[in-house]
Length: 140
Image (cartoon, rainbow, N blue to C red; front, top):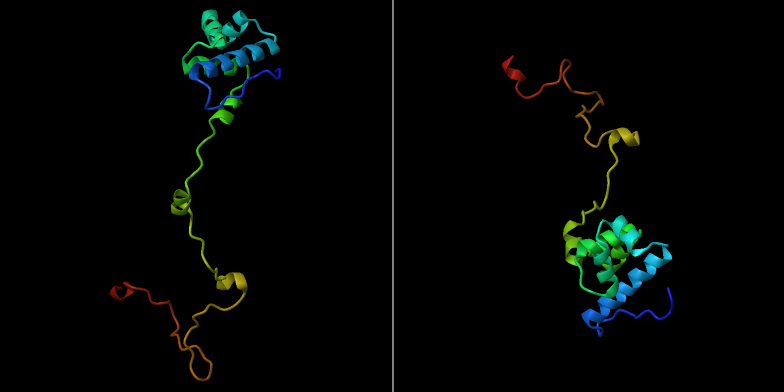
């Protein structure tokens, strides 16, 4: 593009912005080596619609999207209207509270579990032999 392009800014009127966008579309079309008819067919719009867009007339947004897609310029919309960033309070609400510490499991550390079986004074286990008692087995 040449250096004569206007900078789109809030001081410009809507008509001036449309005229500038039309000139830019025309320049990109010419740089791509496409005629108005070829671009219109590729975009799936009429040639007269493309002519109006390049002249700075108001057009429907789907037509602009089709022309940008045909020119392989959809990324321009991403740059023009980026996705909104989350607000700080939204980030805080959705932020997962991380644990302050993590305890290693007994099997992973190779150490004995924290709670040990009760032992007699002589170091012998006082758990009675046989199957371990669980709730509900007293009915058997």
